[in-house]
Every structure is written in C-alpha cells, then in structure tokens.
Length: 154
Image 1 (cartoon, rainbow, N blue to C red):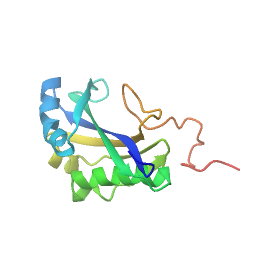
Image 2 (image 1 turned 90 degrees about the horizontal axis):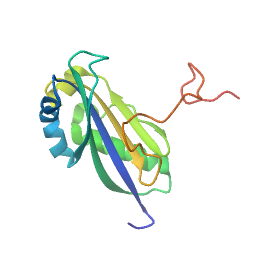
Image 3 (image 1 turned 135 degrees about the vertical axis):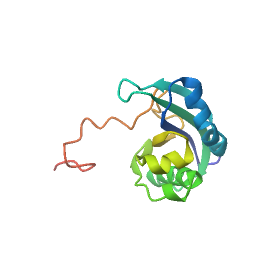
Image 4 (image 1 turned 60 degrees about the vertical axis):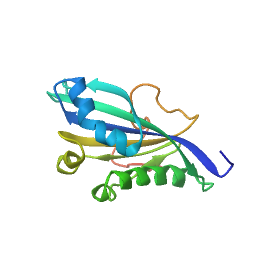
C-alpha cells in the first residue's frame, strides 16, 4: 500500500426474511460472490421483525487515497453501491471518519438482489480505525442534537 492508498473494510449487512441461518446465508450467497466477500456474522433479529435475519458480509479493499479521508470513504461506499446495481446508486452516503455509510430501505429493490431482502446497511471503515469487531452500526451519534442531523449548535 502506498501513501496514496487507503486500506478499508467494507461491511454489508443485509436484512432478509428467513426462518433460519442457513436460509439467510443461502439468500445472500449471490451478494457474497458479487462483492468477493465473506460472511462474518448472521444474527436472528426476529425479536424486532418475526422471521427476520441479518447477514453481515466483509470485504477488505484498498482505494486510492485523495488526501481527504471523507472523500475516500464515501467513494468506497458509492463504488460498492454501483456494484450492487444501478438502482442503488442514488442512495445518500453519510460520512464521519473513520467511517462512511448508507442504508437502503427499499424492499422492492433489495428483494431483486436478495430473495426476501428488506434492507441493506453498507459501511466503509478505515483499516486500523475503530471498526466494529463484532456487530455493525453507524458511529455513535448520541452527542448530536435532535433534528439537526450532522450540524452541531454554535
């Protein structure tokens, strides 16, 4: 890796309608192959939605760095969205280094990609950052004020 490249981990979490782990993994196998990733976690989320599982796929990647970590992270998320298909490319990407993320909550679109698919959370984390070792989720935003998004008062 050169000074102009940035190591990253992509985490793609797919929420699917599935009764068991094997069915969920099978439903997501095409995305695993498409992204050249590996399944790192399968979770039963049926307490929130009956018959629901989440499958998290990981892929290490190296992207040319721009000197701007936000731009590099956001580009990694957009490139992964483009790989998923043209319907995903209009998704808004949020960035707060060391990560960038987007959520696609469109069952009709996700269902075309994954049988029973409901939502996709796609995250890019800088390697060596505070990337979650288990579980996923966007960075803690509890210090943000309601209704102000990324803006802080002052």
